[in-house]
Amino acid sequence: MTTAAEPDFGSESEHPDDRCLLICGFQPVDGASADATERAMAQLANADWAPAGITASYFFAPRNWNTATEAIDDMMRASRAGAVLLVATARRSPDFAIEMRAQNRVSITKPDSVGQLRPSGRIASVGPAVARATAPVADMLHGLLDAGLKAHASSEAGDYICNYVLYRLLTEVASDSGAPPVGCLRAPGLGADGQPLNAQDEQLIDHIAHGVMACANVVADFIPGSREPAGV
Image (cartoon, rainbow, N blue to C red; front, side):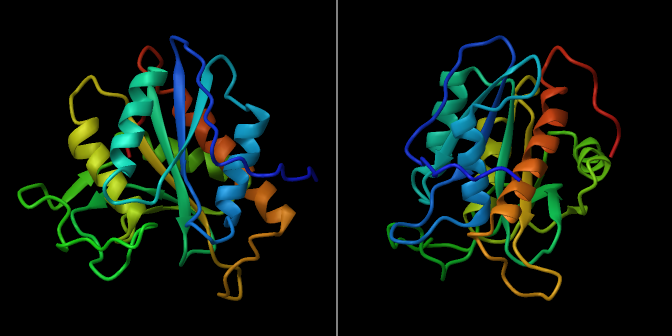
């Protein structure tokens, strides 16, 4: 078992390359401890891990309604990303979840990291009800299962920052036919007993890091110029 690196959420790795995967996590809420997913992401970023044959850039977006999507968009351009993997925690799942879609809905009762609330329950007033992930969901799921991890495909990305960012990335930032594929992996947030997992557990952190690597390896194969994805 490896030791989890001390999280460095203020850093990002940029390596210009023809084939770059952008792996995006989220910053912890100000004053709160990082959860296991955030720690696993920081561990991978600090180790500068990347799938074989490509470059990985890591970015930790602010949990902010007004700036999160724009910050990821800027990083996509700066890193010349050929694909994007968004990583968050599935608070109500004991397994890894591959999100098949984002929904045009958001909580109006959950403040972001600076205490702001959304003024409307819809993300886009004239946008589609759902936006399908453009990364290879079936292949991502198979990659996790082949790695010996419990995982399922999900159509419920929640109503908070992760769903909000995923929806806007799919409908605004990466909506063109030639845009980088965007996928979303959510790591387990519950144990088999239905209780929240211990964010300090190094075995859990390594488990989540393993899942991120397995999923990233698959997404990297679908950066434009590689093979075509299988049907979902």
